[in-house]
Amino acid sequence: MEAAEGAGTGSSLAGLMPEILPHPVLIVDLCGRIDFVNRALEEALGVRRDELLGRSLVDVLYRGEKFDTRGRYKSALLETLETGREYRLQTVEVKTVFHRMPKTFLVDTIVLTSPEGEKRGACAVYYDVSRDRRLLKRSVIDRLASVTEHFETIYAFAEAIGARDLYTMGHSEKVAEYARFIADRLGLDAREVEKAYLCGIVHDVGKIGVPENILNKPGPLSPEEFQQITHHPSMGAGILSHISWLEDVVPVVMSHHERYDGSGYPRGLRGEEIPLLSRILAVADAFDAMTSDRSYRRALPLSVAVNELRRGAGSQFDPLVVEAFLSMLDDYEGGGG
Image (tube, one colour):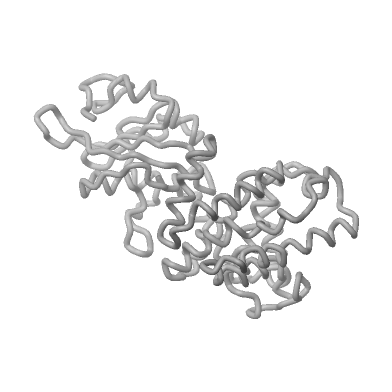
């Protein structure tokens, strides 16, 4: 992709084509300053281009931090600019100073050059996985590829659950993302971080055994109906136990509704008797449930969800996991991309 001179909206690198593309486009110059954003990026991130243009990519989206705690580039676009490594459909989280949580995209990056081959900057084209289930599937495959070769089977579990529970379509993927963020914040090694994501994808597989009229009931559950819901961790663990390469996931799924004070189900485990990844899933699951529309209520405001997590720390939730998640939310006010 070669840059066109003098075209576009106030950009020396962007031509007309990036402006009319249906996908978000971001271009930086040789100094890493944001040189161009198109309308699709404004709409996808809920920002105005005049809030971004001319500003340092690292400063405006990453609070001045180029690398994460593991020494990896936070931005695929910046890595392309500085190293020349180009990406094709790489899964990334794009964050801004205007949002608490990131959005997941697939991204293509490319070095921009003049007709003479001189480097002029770098360009990223983003594909919003939340708008296309095929892209979402590709994103899940990217996440799971380092953990297992059987990611197609795992994704099928998430699809099967989402097809039955209309109000939680995409819930497993969001829980998986949150769980991965928390595990990374807690300093777990790379394999455990990706396992946290894997557990999030399959954590509700046991809901396959719960009648749809209960899953999608618009009002409160009766005691008998709630009792049926409480069986889904055990049913999920039972299903997964027949798959040898998921043996490490089984106890995590079994325990994701245990409570830190011992009042959860199915076994009444407490504190560190509960696997750490289960304690992580409990926070991720609760947060997404509170901030998503459900059959029985609309999504709660973020402030209410945050207060509920704080209130439940030490009783429903591991307080260290809650602290890690809330500190992550605070960080994401500063963004990334």
